[in-house]
Image (cartoon, rainbow, N blue to C red; front, side, top):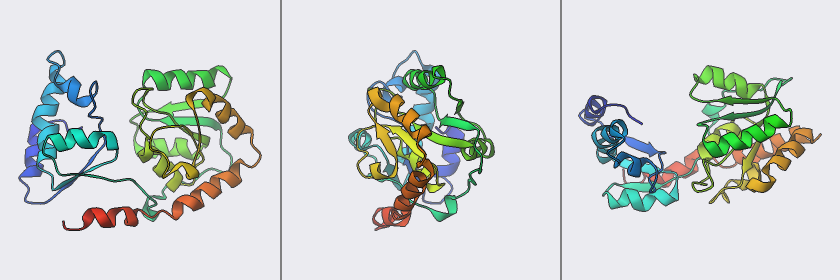
Length: 238
């Protein structure tokens, strides 16, 4: 989230149009509700003085979680739904021939995700976790990993974290994900299972002798979903 009102003011007064890719969750109990809680003054200030003004000054807001559309539109914000796709320029990770990490998860470590990762660790696998590291360091972890993981934020907020998945697919990674809502458009490009069966799928995938073939099959499917096809309708009329 943008940190301060001065930065937002300089963006809004810079004389250029800008688009916001909205990735925060606006449903009750998350960003909007937390910002309204007087007990969390820092977040409340950031939301009211920085993030909301940034959204209000945008020419468009591209929202990747359909559940957020109603909330954003209720604030009078120009919101349109979008999803990702293949971008040749984002192929920036060179996978190692010999990979020493069994499973990698990068992203915020919520209680739900922590529980899932700890279950893998207890089985003796080499599990790595990373959050908010420089991209050079994160990409080195990705390059060394046999299987990359995707886990829902929580059982309540089980939207598909497609930004993470599409980046990994774009870089030819094998992804095992926890099944999420609204994943149909992407689900033939990664392996997925219910929360109950996810641990078993992780183990099966790691031990599968055809793992590399599956990885490349998923990459080739994703490569047929160019991001330009997603952007064209969003840019019409701008």
